[in-house]
Structures are given as structure tokens and as C-alpha cells.
Amino acid sequence: MGLNKKSVDDINAKGKRVLVRCDFNVPLKNGEITDETRIVAALPTINKLIKDGGKVILCSHLGKVKNGPNEGESLAPVAKRLSEKLGKEVNFISDYNVTGEAATAAVEAMNEGDVVLLQNTRFRGKEETKNGEEFSKELADLADLYVCDAFGSSHRAHASVEGVTKFITEKGGENAVGYLMQKEIDFLGNAVENPVRPFVAILGGAKVADKLNVINNLLEKCDTLIIGGGMAFTFLKAKGYEIGNSLVDDEKLDYCKEMMAKAESLGKKLLLPIDTTIADGFPNPIDAEIAVEVVDADKIPAGKEGLDIGTKTAELFADAVKSAKTVVWNGPMGVFENPTLAKGTIAVAKALAETEATTIIGGGDSAAAVNQLGFADKMSHISTGGGASLEFLEGKELPGVVAADDK
Ligand code: AMP
Image 1 (cartoon, rainbow, N blue to C red):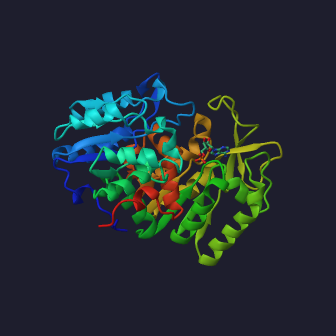
Image 2 (cartoon, helix red, strand yellow):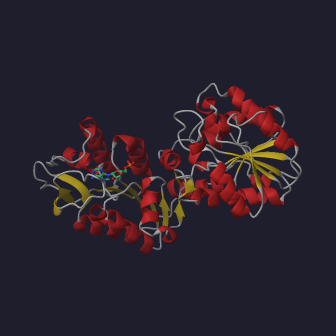
Image 3 (cartoon, rainbow, N blue to C red):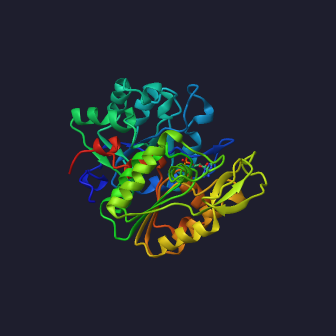
């Protein structure tokens, strides 16, 4: 699927103030960045705009900012790391108001190729609400052009993602998408809309309810849909199996039946676990040592809980991946945070690492699992956006993409 939106290659940034919405929502521990993936992913767009002689004004949110602005969720550590990565000074505007006098003065003083980073956009509560117009306009007032490169936030119609574009247009500016957005959309879009077949989609994670539309949409697009993780048990129960104390969503039993019937009528393969790794209960703490056994999926004893796919299932799923040409994976196969219950997720990650197919990992937990288990460099693409990539797989349009100017 070609993206018919203006990109950074279609705008002339020379001497212009360019506001770039990045996704610098990095994990922090005691003020230190523990994973710089999102910073590294933003570099190509930033470097391109610097090279073109733009005045590069960066903004992003970080964290949930539940209790108002605070130093723990300041973008200061990002400014420092970004400055090291770019090999040049990043002028960080620490003002909790994000826009305002300090930001305006800093932007006025910019030369071509300079970089300014504004404070966490969520420090302005209105970023997240529909009433963010004032903030959107203040952001637009700082710039001539706008570039959205925050794939991880592109499913939210926030002030700095979508709201700002209207005001940029009003003042005669242009709205484009950055290289990261383009890359994400190329991979995910091609996989879903124009896959090289066989196309195998793998879904896991905790709840069926979170992925209803993803299951429905992918069933239409893929050749084989594999379902593992906690969500598989609602399907197994819908088939009439006893599932003990395994995770289940009784309200979705009919939905699961409908999906199984849909797969059959479309002639698609829907693979469910044939065996499962069970224990007396959920590990507490999550990485505690745990005694497990593997039983057939239709023989889960009362009182036991299925916490990972079993060995035969791991082989079945790995086999399906072997002959695939395109694989999309979202959601772990079990409680992968626990080494004893990570085996199914590792087996699937390994199968993806070994196949010649284009392999695309939806963000969130599956990206974390692939990184944590050491398979990251074997995948064709690991999405930087969990929620955004899921919405993409649901077939939804992303507000951050829609808001960019058409070519
Ligand atoms: P999600 O956020 O929906 O992708 O779910 C990810 C979470 O699902 C991880 O924290 C896993 O520990 C959890 N999970 C995966 N399989 C199971 C299972 N069989 N029972 C309970 N939780 C699970």
C-alpha cells in the first residue's frame, strides 16, 4: 500500500521552523533511559531536517502524567541522550507550560540546523482532550511546517498529533509524515493489504476482548490465523472443552464460535493450542519458580490454570510459520515474564527468526518479548507502536496519518 501523504521528502525545510511530533515515550528507571529504541527510530527524520537547514522544533509526550507535571516525567533525559546521538546540542525548554515565552524566545533565536526540544506535551492536560484547541494553536504558532513522526501516538487525535495540523494549514503551512511513520505504514500496510502469501497472523496476549476487531479483520486478510496466549482459552471453551481456572471471557464465547465458523466458511486455517502448560495458579510474583505440567488442550483438570502453550502446540505453530512468506505477530503465547512459562513465546520467536518470510512484530508486549529474548535483529520489522499497530491491524485509519496533507 503506497502512502499517498506528503513526507519529509516533499517539503522544503530550508530556513523554516519545522515542528516535529516524535514518540520519545521511553522507559525510565531512576531518571535513566532503559531502552533508547524510540530515540534511535526518530533520528533519520531529525537528521534529514537538520541537513536541509530547517529549524527543528521537537515535541513528544512521555508517560501518563496522571498527577500533573513533575520532574520524573520531564523530557530532560531524552534531550541529553538525543544530543549525544545527534552529535550536537539540543536546546531543551524545561518550562512545564511547553509553549509560551521561553519556547517562543528559544525558537526566535534558532539558526538553520538548530534543534530545540519542548517539554512533555502531556504536561498540558488539554493535549489529551478534545478541548486542546488552544494548545494546538500555540504549538502551530511556533512553526511554519509540521511533521508527524510519532507512530506510537498516531492512533490518538491529540493536540500535538492531529489538532495542530489544522492551524498549520490555516497559516499556509504544510503537514507531512516522517520517515518512521512511512516505514511503519509501509510494513504494516503491505502485510495486511498486499501480503506475499501464505500470510500467517499470530495473536496472543491476555484478553480476547482487546483484540475482537483484529481477529475479525485479520481472518479476512490472512491465510492462517494462529491464536495462543490467554485469549486462546475462550476459544477452547467455545469448542466445548473444560479449561479449569484458565483465563476466560464468558461474554465472548459466542463471538469465538462466530469467528471459528467464519474461518471455516472463508476456507481459512484457524489454529488453536492442542496442548497447554498448566499450573496450580498464576505465579506470584510473576517470575516466581513454578511447577508445571503439559496436558492436551481438552484435558485441563478442574482447578488448574493454562499459562503457556504446550510443546506440541509450539511445534504446530512453528510448522505453520515455516511455509509462510509474511508473518505478523502480536501478543505473547503465555506468561512470558516467567522463564518457565516463556517457552511457547520463545518457540514462536525462534520460528520467526528462522523463516525467510517477512516478519513483522506488533509493538507492546510482543516487541518486548522479542527484544528480551534476543531475537530483535532477526525480524524484518518491529513496530514502535503497540496500540497504533493494533489499530492498524484492525483496519482502522490513524488520526495522525489522516491529518497529514495528501500528496
Ligand atoms: P496483552 O497486553 O493482551 O498483549 O497481554 C500480554 C499479557 O498476557 C502478558 O503480560 C502475559 O503474561 C499475559 N498472558 C499470556 N498468556 C496468558 C495466560 N495463558 N494466562 C494469563 N495471562 C497470560
